Image (tube, rainbow, N blue to C red; front, side, top):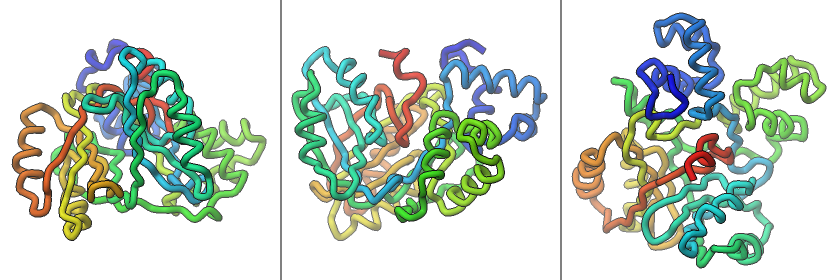
Length: 326
C-alpha cells in the first residue's frame, strides 16, 4: 500500500469500510470481517491511520457543551486567497463542517453557535474580518433529518439497508466536566484505549469506560471514521441546495434520506430549501440522481449544486488529509 488514496487496494478499502462500521473495533474483529490475518490487518490499518488516509474520532452532539443552533455559511473569497482563508477557518472549533467547493461560493461551512452568543459578532467581527473574505451568506438550519457516517457501507456493500437516521439532540445536563475531558481527548484519537485515556486524565479506567458507554448509549457521541470519497473510489461529492414546496418539505426530506447516496439532509430557513450532501460513484450516477430522483419528486421546484473539492472539517474534527492537498 502506498501513502496516497489513489494507490489503495481492495484490502485497504475493506479495512476502511470495517472502520466506518465500527471505528473502535479491534484488529482481530476487523480481520474476521476482512477474512485475512490479524497481523496483516493491523499493519495495514495502522499505516492508513499514520498516513492520514483515515482518522477515527469521537464526534460530540452539536449541542455539546450547551444548547446551540447551526448556520450554513457560504463564503466568497478574493481570487487566490482561498488557501489562506481555509487555514484560518480550519482552526475554529465552532465549525462542524468546512469544505472548499465549486459554484458561486468558494467555501461552505456549518457554524455551531451557542444560544445567547452573538451571531453578529461571530460573522461580522470574526469571519468576515478574515483577510480575503469578500462575502459571507448565512442561513439558519431549522432541522437535521439525516446524518450518515457509514456512507461507504451503503454504497459499496450489497444489501446494506437504506436508513434515515433522525439526529439526536442532547440536553446540556448530559455532559459534565469529566465527560468533556474524555470527549476532547477522544476527538483527537477515537481508537485510544480506555486505559490510555484514563492515564492521560488521571482517572480510573472503569470511570472512563462507564462514562463513554453512557454517552454513546444516549446518542450524545458517535465514533466516526473520516475518509475522503476518492479514497473509496467515488468521483462525485456534491452539496445540493434544493428549493421545495413548503407544504412538502418534511415529506421530501424523508424521501431524500432513503436514497443510498445521500449522507446529510437538513431544512434551512431561506427559500424553503433543503441542504443535501450526496456522494456517488460516477458522473453517470449524478445524472441518474438528478433526473430519476430529484426530477421526479413531487414538490421539488429546482436546485443549485456545488461540487466538494476538499473537505477540511467534519463533525467538528479536522480531516488529516486536507493540508497535503492545498
